[in-house]
Image (cartoon, rainbow, N blue to C red; front, side, top):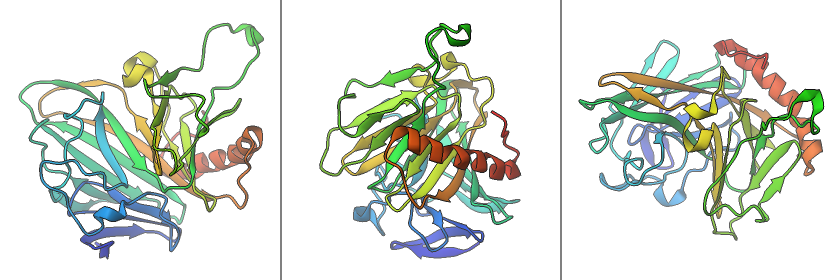
Length: 321
């Protein structure tokens, strides 16, 4: 196990192959604090105000990075502080396993399992697990959140466009979920025919958020230097009524420089002692030029997403959807 000091946090764990490196904390979490090309830009944000520090046991701290929560979002239940050392940090087969202590307020134990491709592909499998340690069943949905580096944009795909009545289809196909504070006229949004774009802007401190029911199964963060983090879910018989937030499977949020790309699993009733699992697949790529137009960016991303699915086949993910 490659333990390093990272931004003042001792006993952080670094895993890498020839292309990709990840760093996770053991002093708190579980959280992935860094993901990027070897020697390159961190595509996740780590709050510099908390470098080398750990928050108090009873206060949730937004260190940044990638974490696991559960939905629906309810304060303070969802905001369980992860400021205690991880209970378990070890390899199990090809996976780095990071297990939290049981949250006293919710009775839920969180775990991240991280597997990086061994064949030099820029591919990562992140498994999220929630275990119910209560004496009663509890209904919730796994919720994976990545705080991305400032200065970039999140793009989410629109369901394929068709004209009215084309292919004899008349039913809706683009569920879009808005929050009370969502302002669709805000300049950070671009509502394209192919993509939905949301930029972060340090000068604009009002929050913006949407959710979508995304049967295409992917979303992406594009950094200011052209590095791209693609998130892919293995789509299998999605049914919007099974998901929280009016059927959201992908969400994005921004406030000032802060931005997240989020995915959600279906709501499940977890019996005492049982565990539910939710998997994200990550793929890293680089664009020498990032088109600003919706159609141009969509055309640029299309082969990249196909490439990501092929590379992620090493983990057994389906590639034909």
